[in-house]
Image (cartoon, rainbow, N blue to C red; front, side, top):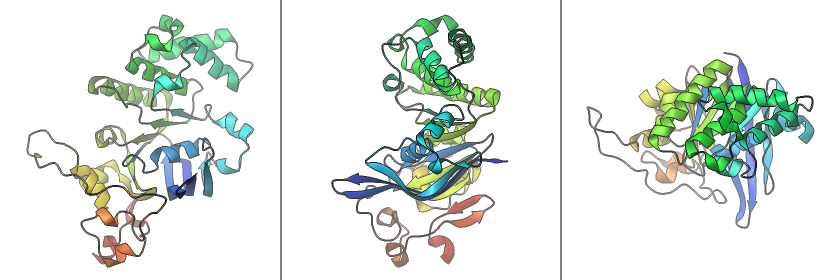
Length: 322
Protein backbone atom coordinates (compact mmCIF):
# COMPACT_ATOMS: atom_id res chain seq x y z
CA UNK A 1 0.00 0.00 0.00
CA UNK A 2 1.07 3.56 -0.70
CA UNK A 3 2.47 5.54 2.22
CA UNK A 4 0.28 8.43 3.40
CA UNK A 5 1.92 9.59 6.65
CA UNK A 6 5.57 9.11 7.58
CA UNK A 7 6.91 10.25 10.95
CA UNK A 8 10.71 10.28 10.76
CA UNK A 9 12.88 10.38 13.92
CA UNK A 10 10.46 12.70 15.72
CA UNK A 11 11.38 14.11 19.13
CA UNK A 12 9.04 16.27 21.23
CA UNK A 13 10.10 17.82 24.55
CA UNK A 14 8.27 19.69 27.31
CA UNK A 15 9.93 22.16 29.64
CA UNK A 16 8.91 21.53 33.25
CA UNK A 17 10.07 22.79 36.67
CA UNK A 18 11.86 19.44 37.11
CA UNK A 19 13.66 19.73 33.78
CA UNK A 20 13.04 18.81 30.14
CA UNK A 21 10.75 15.83 29.59
CA UNK A 22 11.21 14.01 26.27
CA UNK A 23 7.62 12.89 25.65
CA UNK A 24 8.41 11.51 22.17
CA UNK A 25 11.91 10.17 21.68
CA UNK A 26 13.22 9.63 18.14
CA UNK A 27 10.04 7.90 16.90
CA UNK A 28 9.58 6.78 13.29
CA UNK A 29 6.19 5.50 12.14
CA UNK A 30 4.18 5.27 8.94
CA UNK A 31 0.51 5.00 8.04
CA UNK A 32 -0.38 3.67 4.60
CA UNK A 33 -3.42 4.53 2.53
CA UNK A 34 -6.48 2.60 3.62
CA UNK A 35 -4.99 1.03 6.75
CA UNK A 36 -5.60 1.37 10.46
CA UNK A 37 -2.54 1.65 12.70
CA UNK A 38 -3.08 1.15 16.42
CA UNK A 39 -0.77 3.20 18.65
CA UNK A 40 -0.75 1.65 22.13
CA UNK A 41 0.96 1.97 25.49
CA UNK A 42 0.37 3.04 29.07
CA UNK A 43 -0.88 6.52 29.97
CA UNK A 44 1.93 9.04 29.66
CA UNK A 45 3.95 7.07 27.11
CA UNK A 46 3.69 9.81 24.45
CA UNK A 47 0.84 8.49 22.25
CA UNK A 48 -1.29 11.62 22.36
CA UNK A 49 1.75 13.88 22.03
CA UNK A 50 2.67 12.08 18.82
CA UNK A 51 -0.86 12.62 17.50
CA UNK A 52 -0.85 16.30 18.48
CA UNK A 53 2.57 16.79 16.85
CA UNK A 54 1.26 15.29 13.62
CA UNK A 55 -1.57 17.83 13.67
CA UNK A 56 0.86 20.68 14.40
CA UNK A 57 -0.84 21.35 17.73
CA UNK A 58 2.13 21.21 20.11
CA UNK A 59 2.16 24.44 22.11
CA UNK A 60 4.67 25.85 24.66
CA UNK A 61 6.02 24.57 26.97
CA UNK A 62 6.16 21.75 24.41
CA UNK A 63 8.15 21.85 21.17
CA UNK A 64 9.28 19.60 18.36
CA UNK A 65 13.07 19.48 18.73
CA UNK A 66 13.99 17.00 15.97
CA UNK A 67 12.58 14.94 13.13
CA UNK A 68 10.19 15.35 10.23
CA UNK A 69 6.54 14.55 9.57
CA UNK A 70 5.73 13.82 5.93
CA UNK A 71 2.10 13.80 4.81
CA UNK A 72 1.24 13.24 1.16
CA UNK A 73 4.87 14.06 0.39
CA UNK A 74 4.99 17.38 2.29
CA UNK A 75 7.07 17.93 5.44
CA UNK A 76 4.55 19.37 7.90
CA UNK A 77 7.29 20.61 10.22
CA UNK A 78 8.40 23.14 7.57
CA UNK A 79 4.95 24.62 6.94
CA UNK A 80 3.75 27.95 8.31
CA UNK A 81 0.74 28.19 10.62
CA UNK A 82 -1.45 29.31 7.71
CA UNK A 83 -0.26 26.43 5.51
CA UNK A 84 -0.88 23.93 8.32
CA UNK A 85 -4.36 25.32 8.86
CA UNK A 86 -5.24 24.46 5.25
CA UNK A 87 -4.24 20.82 5.82
CA UNK A 88 -5.54 20.42 9.37
CA UNK A 89 -9.18 19.39 9.22
CA UNK A 90 -9.28 19.21 5.43
CA UNK A 91 -6.66 16.49 4.85
CA UNK A 92 -5.91 15.35 8.42
CA UNK A 93 -8.59 15.42 11.10
CA UNK A 94 -8.53 14.48 14.78
CA UNK A 95 -11.11 12.98 17.11
CA UNK A 96 -10.35 14.00 20.68
CA UNK A 97 -10.98 12.07 23.90
CA UNK A 98 -13.73 14.15 25.49
CA UNK A 99 -16.41 15.47 23.13
CA UNK A 100 -18.05 17.55 25.86
CA UNK A 101 -14.95 19.75 26.15
CA UNK A 102 -14.44 19.83 22.37
CA UNK A 103 -17.96 20.98 21.48
CA UNK A 104 -19.12 24.53 22.26
CA UNK A 105 -22.03 24.17 24.71
CA UNK A 106 -23.78 27.34 23.52
CA UNK A 107 -23.80 26.38 19.84
CA UNK A 108 -26.12 23.96 18.11
CA UNK A 109 -24.53 20.93 16.49
CA UNK A 110 -25.37 22.32 13.05
CA UNK A 111 -23.48 25.53 13.92
CA UNK A 112 -20.34 23.47 14.56
CA UNK A 113 -20.55 21.88 11.11
CA UNK A 114 -21.26 25.19 9.34
CA UNK A 115 -18.42 26.98 11.11
CA UNK A 116 -16.02 24.10 10.41
CA UNK A 117 -16.87 23.99 6.70
CA UNK A 118 -16.72 27.74 6.13
CA UNK A 119 -13.45 28.13 8.05
CA UNK A 120 -11.78 26.04 5.35
CA UNK A 121 -13.76 27.35 2.38
CA UNK A 122 -15.36 30.77 2.71
CA UNK A 123 -17.26 30.17 -0.54
CA UNK A 124 -19.28 27.38 1.07
CA UNK A 125 -22.79 28.66 1.73
CA UNK A 126 -24.67 27.94 4.93
CA UNK A 127 -27.22 25.93 2.93
CA UNK A 128 -24.48 23.75 1.41
CA UNK A 129 -22.93 23.15 4.82
CA UNK A 130 -26.30 22.24 6.33
CA UNK A 131 -27.02 19.81 3.49
CA UNK A 132 -23.66 18.11 4.09
CA UNK A 133 -24.43 18.05 7.82
CA UNK A 134 -27.71 16.24 7.21
CA UNK A 135 -25.95 13.60 5.09
CA UNK A 136 -23.26 13.03 7.71
CA UNK A 137 -25.80 12.85 10.54
CA UNK A 138 -27.64 10.12 8.69
CA UNK A 139 -24.34 8.26 8.15
CA UNK A 140 -23.79 8.51 11.89
CA UNK A 141 -27.18 6.96 12.61
CA UNK A 142 -28.55 10.22 14.04
CA UNK A 143 -31.79 11.80 12.74
CA UNK A 144 -30.84 14.85 10.66
CA UNK A 145 -33.25 17.11 12.57
CA UNK A 146 -31.21 16.59 15.74
CA UNK A 147 -28.51 18.83 14.29
CA UNK A 148 -30.62 21.67 15.71
CA UNK A 149 -29.96 20.43 19.26
CA UNK A 150 -27.21 21.53 21.64
CA UNK A 151 -24.40 19.19 22.79
CA UNK A 152 -25.85 18.77 26.30
CA UNK A 153 -28.99 17.27 24.75
CA UNK A 154 -26.97 14.30 23.44
CA UNK A 155 -25.71 11.26 25.32
CA UNK A 156 -21.97 10.64 25.58
CA UNK A 157 -22.06 8.14 22.74
CA UNK A 158 -24.06 10.50 20.52
CA UNK A 159 -21.65 13.36 21.21
CA UNK A 160 -18.77 11.11 20.18
CA UNK A 161 -20.64 10.33 16.96
CA UNK A 162 -20.91 14.07 16.35
CA UNK A 163 -17.15 14.43 16.85
CA UNK A 164 -16.58 11.65 14.31
CA UNK A 165 -18.94 13.45 11.93
CA UNK A 166 -17.02 16.72 12.29
CA UNK A 167 -13.80 14.87 11.52
CA UNK A 168 -15.41 13.53 8.33
CA UNK A 169 -16.98 16.82 7.27
CA UNK A 170 -14.21 17.83 4.85
CA UNK A 171 -13.42 14.33 3.54
CA UNK A 172 -9.90 14.02 5.00
CA UNK A 173 -7.48 11.30 3.95
CA UNK A 174 -6.33 10.57 7.53
CA UNK A 175 -8.13 10.63 10.85
CA UNK A 176 -6.23 10.53 14.15
CA UNK A 177 -8.54 9.12 16.83
CA UNK A 178 -7.25 9.78 20.34
CA UNK A 179 -8.95 7.36 22.77
CA UNK A 180 -12.28 7.74 20.91
CA UNK A 181 -14.23 5.46 23.28
CA UNK A 182 -12.98 6.82 26.63
CA UNK A 183 -15.71 6.93 29.32
CA UNK A 184 -18.21 5.03 27.16
CA UNK A 185 -19.79 1.80 28.37
CA UNK A 186 -18.92 -1.40 26.52
CA UNK A 187 -22.13 -1.51 24.47
CA UNK A 188 -21.77 2.07 23.24
CA UNK A 189 -18.05 1.46 22.68
CA UNK A 190 -18.85 -1.47 20.41
CA UNK A 191 -21.33 0.69 18.48
CA UNK A 192 -18.76 3.48 18.02
CA UNK A 193 -16.10 1.05 16.80
CA UNK A 194 -18.49 -0.55 14.33
CA UNK A 195 -19.48 2.92 13.11
CA UNK A 196 -15.82 3.85 12.60
CA UNK A 197 -15.24 0.67 10.59
CA UNK A 198 -18.21 1.39 8.34
CA UNK A 199 -17.23 5.03 7.80
CA UNK A 200 -13.61 4.06 7.12
CA UNK A 201 -14.80 1.83 4.26
CA UNK A 202 -17.34 4.33 2.94
CA UNK A 203 -15.01 7.34 2.97
CA UNK A 204 -11.77 5.44 2.07
CA UNK A 205 -10.00 6.65 5.19
CA UNK A 206 -6.70 5.87 6.84
CA UNK A 207 -6.84 5.77 10.63
CA UNK A 208 -4.26 6.28 13.38
CA UNK A 209 -6.00 4.88 16.44
CA UNK A 210 -4.45 5.98 19.76
CA UNK A 211 -5.52 3.83 22.69
CA UNK A 212 -4.38 1.90 25.75
CA UNK A 213 -7.06 -0.75 25.13
CA UNK A 214 -5.54 -3.82 23.48
CA UNK A 215 -9.01 -5.24 22.84
CA UNK A 216 -9.84 -2.28 20.60
CA UNK A 217 -6.54 -2.72 18.80
CA UNK A 218 -7.24 -6.40 18.17
CA UNK A 219 -10.62 -5.52 16.69
CA UNK A 220 -9.69 -2.48 14.60
CA UNK A 221 -6.02 -2.38 13.62
CA UNK A 222 -4.10 -3.75 10.64
CA UNK A 223 -0.74 -2.90 12.20
CA UNK A 224 0.24 -2.00 15.77
CA UNK A 225 2.91 0.34 17.13
CA UNK A 226 3.77 -0.04 20.83
CA UNK A 227 5.21 2.93 22.75
CA UNK A 228 6.91 3.01 26.12
CA UNK A 229 8.33 6.08 27.90
CA UNK A 230 8.27 8.13 24.69
CA UNK A 231 9.99 5.50 22.53
CA UNK A 232 8.67 3.08 19.94
CA UNK A 233 9.54 -0.41 21.21
CA UNK A 234 7.74 -2.61 18.67
CA UNK A 235 5.80 -2.37 15.42
CA UNK A 236 4.22 -5.30 13.59
CA UNK A 237 1.00 -6.58 12.07
CA UNK A 238 -1.84 -7.10 14.51
CA UNK A 239 -1.48 -10.87 13.99
CA UNK A 240 2.20 -10.83 14.95
CA UNK A 241 1.67 -8.55 17.94
CA UNK A 242 -0.96 -10.83 19.45
CA UNK A 243 0.41 -14.14 18.17
CA UNK A 244 4.16 -13.68 18.47
CA UNK A 245 5.19 -10.47 20.31
CA UNK A 246 8.92 -9.83 20.38
CA UNK A 247 9.39 -7.11 23.01
CA UNK A 248 9.03 -7.92 26.74
CA UNK A 249 6.82 -4.85 27.23
CA UNK A 250 4.44 -5.96 24.49
CA UNK A 251 4.27 -9.41 26.07
CA UNK A 252 3.60 -7.85 29.48
CA UNK A 253 0.78 -5.72 28.05
CA UNK A 254 -0.87 -8.80 26.56
CA UNK A 255 -0.50 -10.79 29.79
CA UNK A 256 -2.28 -8.00 31.68
CA UNK A 257 -5.46 -8.41 29.60
CA UNK A 258 -8.21 -10.23 31.53
CA UNK A 259 -9.59 -13.43 29.97
CA UNK A 260 -12.98 -14.95 30.63
CA UNK A 261 -13.03 -18.76 30.93
CA UNK A 262 -12.24 -21.10 28.03
CA UNK A 263 -8.91 -22.71 27.20
CA UNK A 264 -7.15 -19.35 27.44
CA UNK A 265 -7.96 -19.03 31.14
CA UNK A 266 -4.91 -17.94 33.15
CA UNK A 267 -3.84 -15.84 36.10
CA UNK A 268 -3.94 -12.11 35.46
CA UNK A 269 -0.46 -10.57 35.58
CA UNK A 270 0.48 -6.99 36.31
CA UNK A 271 3.56 -5.10 35.14
CA UNK A 272 5.70 -4.46 38.21
CA UNK A 273 6.87 -0.96 39.03
CA UNK A 274 5.87 2.28 37.33
CA UNK A 275 6.80 4.07 34.10
CA UNK A 276 9.94 6.19 34.46
CA UNK A 277 10.09 9.90 35.16
CA UNK A 278 10.73 11.35 31.70
CA UNK A 279 12.69 14.27 33.15
CA UNK A 280 15.18 11.75 34.58
CA UNK A 281 14.85 8.58 32.48
CA UNK A 282 16.95 5.54 33.39
CA UNK A 283 20.18 4.86 31.57
CA UNK A 284 19.97 2.17 28.89
CA UNK A 285 16.67 0.60 27.92
CA UNK A 286 13.84 2.61 29.50
CA UNK A 287 11.94 -0.60 30.30
CA UNK A 288 14.80 -2.44 32.04
CA UNK A 289 13.80 -1.51 35.64
CA UNK A 290 10.50 -3.36 35.09
CA UNK A 291 11.71 -6.12 32.76
CA UNK A 292 12.06 -9.70 33.99
CA UNK A 293 14.57 -10.44 31.21
CA UNK A 294 16.93 -7.48 31.72
CA UNK A 295 20.67 -8.14 31.76
CA UNK A 296 23.76 -5.93 32.13
CA UNK A 297 23.70 -4.48 28.61
CA UNK A 298 20.08 -3.34 29.07
CA UNK A 299 21.17 -1.10 31.96
CA UNK A 300 23.75 0.86 29.98
CA UNK A 301 22.77 0.80 26.29
CA UNK A 302 19.52 1.94 24.72
CA UNK A 303 18.45 -0.71 22.16
CA UNK A 304 17.73 0.22 18.55
CA UNK A 305 14.80 -1.01 16.50
CA UNK A 306 15.80 -4.25 14.79
CA UNK A 307 13.92 -5.83 11.91
CA UNK A 308 12.09 -8.94 13.11
CA UNK A 309 10.17 -9.74 9.93
CA UNK A 310 8.51 -8.21 6.89
CA UNK A 311 7.29 -4.80 8.07
CA UNK A 312 7.99 -5.52 11.74
CA UNK A 313 10.67 -4.41 14.21
CA UNK A 314 11.39 -4.37 17.93
CA UNK A 315 13.89 -2.58 20.19
CA UNK A 316 15.32 -5.21 22.52
CA UNK A 317 18.87 -6.50 23.13
CA UNK A 318 17.45 -10.02 23.59
CA UNK A 319 16.84 -10.17 19.84
CA UNK A 320 20.59 -10.01 19.23
CA UNK A 321 21.54 -12.80 21.65
CA UNK A 322 19.03 -15.42 20.56
